[in-house]
Length: 92
Length: 314
Image (cartoon, rainbow over all chains, first blue to last red; front, side, top):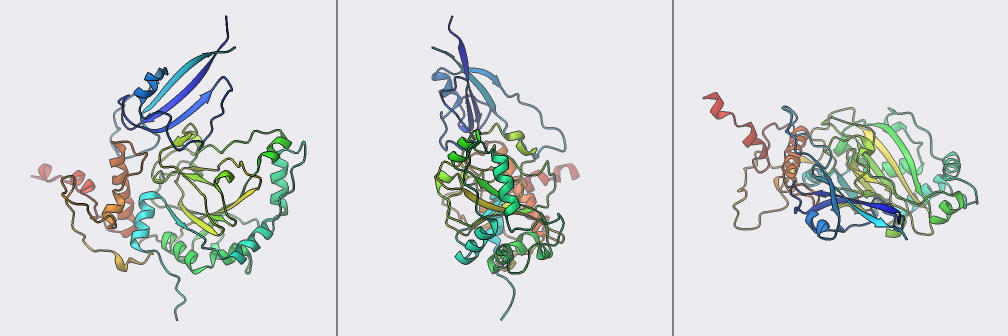
């Protein structure tokens, strides 16, 4: 049986809907065929999360929607709508 | 004749509050740029087996740039006649520093940032990659802010991997490189500039060094500066409109003036989430209130709506 490697795609969307626009992204290629790094692309690989699904990416995890603690309603930190996807690639 | 430097305008300050940066292209004359590069010193050519740490260490040791203790008055940080002192004494630079951090600021730290062409990494056996995006220092909950001056003493081309930064990220309270997972963010900018360009950053702006794919080393010098006195109304406030009336919002029939403080503070960045983008406006208004010492200021009713307790008081 051929060995399989994982490609990971992380999309950050404009709201919690999977068909919302992509505002940030990251890619990690476990096959070693490509190398991605900070600042390597100014255009997103997909327009929305749904577009990634249609291209064969499998959704692994979506960030939770959490209530806003009283007194911290306006505090902002990390990007809120994070979606992890994977593709499994059979190695030759 | 006055010795007062030209101060920033209210529009420039509002833009800094909204976006976290001000850029001044080719602001430093060529003779100061050349002097700085001489003082920084020439980087030794790549040698097989020599790692990047050794190359960097040799460069810092040989640079004619002083070690300076944190907390030193900025006016005392650099010797008279040195390139950095001359750069800091330029009227534009003095005026911008005064406008942003007030009188008598102190030096926090500085660093000579150099990115190396691929041959250095090949010689040293290291991978040539960009720096993860980060916010400098550590979690910083203050409303007050430090500034970081990024000085580009030579022209920077896109392949040289100039500083990458994301406008408008400065008001987010994050922990340094915890956000390293964000490889690319819509609206990110890469510094491509002429020699002598200066980038003034709010300390919170997310940024990182790009990967250098050119044949030449890339040099950038960063100085972090902290206020010791009030940051309130230190710029040229002559263009500040007192008690500016609120403008119509949402239902508007024609394009509104994009140059007002309210318009500048409510201009979104391409990466804004649809809901938290509104919280960014709230936080910009809070920072503008801090800088103007005007607790009633609002832009497009974002704060006034939230502060209306009329019903509860009845």
